Length: 410
Figure 1 (cartoon, one colour):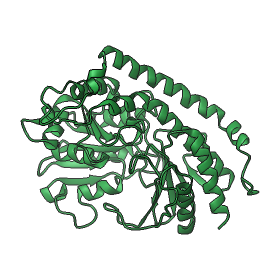
Figure 2 (cartoon, one colour):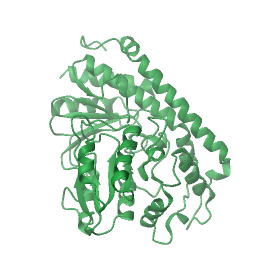
Figure 3 (cartoon, rainbow, N blue to C red):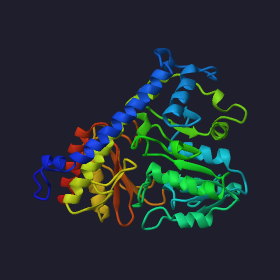
Figure 4 (cartoon, rainbow, N blue to C red):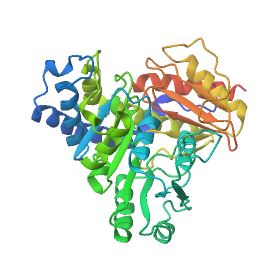
């Protein structure tokens, strides 16, 4: 790039090499864990084959659930292409477990925008949790992160479930490490041992070497077109955790008494197995891209969350651009440097589940895939663009520098 404010690429790569080494170590450890699970369960070619109809005795589907449960340190898992999105998987858990009159508390502040319509906090959408009489409360995060005192003062013997959102979503708050999530679970259980600790694990899978179910979370859920699908899974989501809770989610996905026993896949399961296997590597590519972006834009004078040298708990890189024009320019440039739909010109507009207009760049092979390089954000102060993903670090370096040039040329 020729802009005088841009650092030479090699300088930035030298600046971030310590962080890259840490990311690569975690990727190796997670790859070893997944490889051991595949070997233990003797995954074979016949597990990839498709089924039809009800999908009774679908060994590929059932074996994938078992592999997933082992990798995530859970009793049981539900991995299905029938989940339309991560929000669908999360919603299935909530409606599967909560009943009218139950108290449900988000302990990490306001949840992600699409979850707010599920709960009934925004918009006139019928069928929300509030519609069926679920009592919702919220504990905001403070300047230091999780408000443990606030959680302690809010949880009671009547609290049925808490929601912990691991990632930042469309906010500048700090993502949570698995260790912090474990501390929240310990605190909650000390007050109410029966309270269910539910984690929105989207954007966090394989960023660390363990998942929240290994440190006290009762149930977690997420999307297959984010981290754990490895950029190969074409659609779907997952739920993992205690067997009785996963069963309740399965009853909601299909029907009570049927649950996880049915659900076929005519296309088969190879892409889900293969995506899971390469997920640690792809997540490492996304993390290295985020670190590079943070260092690059910090050197251009922009505020970033997290900083390039901070520990990371999700793949999202927030960059405070300060104006709608710069948000749009960033997304247009990223789209321009995408392998798919590079000719498309993003515009801010309304999207289902969001109260503000959203601008989005996503020239991805899989529609809406957040593990592929993409960026988006609601058009509202302080005008932050949220970048995530990248199947290859080489691609992201080109696109990030293109976005920086576009902003500087405004």
